[in-house]
Length: 140
Image (cartoon, rainbow, N blue to C red; front, side, top):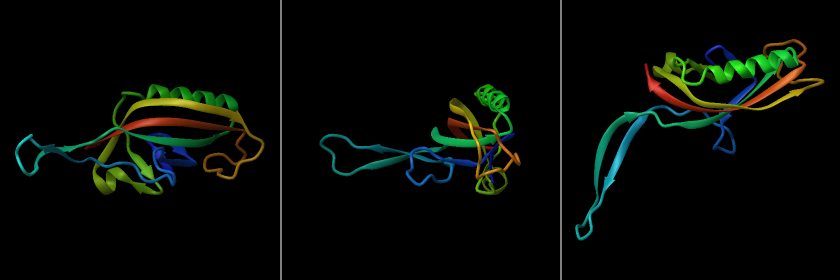
């Protein structure tokens, strides 16, 4: 199961990885310092920060109207309160103490479907919703 706050997805994976992959966690930012004429390299730790990363979601919806309403709810989540992310059954707040802020979200496609394999939320979904997300992880 995959979820971001109240939104449940059939599929939710990294957009920049050919095999999908888990969401980012905040990590230490390291600055490299090199000066002309001086041998060696220095490193300065800037602190742990979350960096924006892209995810792609697919969800099945009961009707085309429900898919359109959910797409509007996705867009309304932009810049709102941080959300709990569950990826492949792992709650990232419970296991890593991390929440996610939606920086950008775009509804890529809403289509009517005849049959669906996922069926996570609906016994007989009639629509599919695809979206791309830009998220930033933050320590809670």
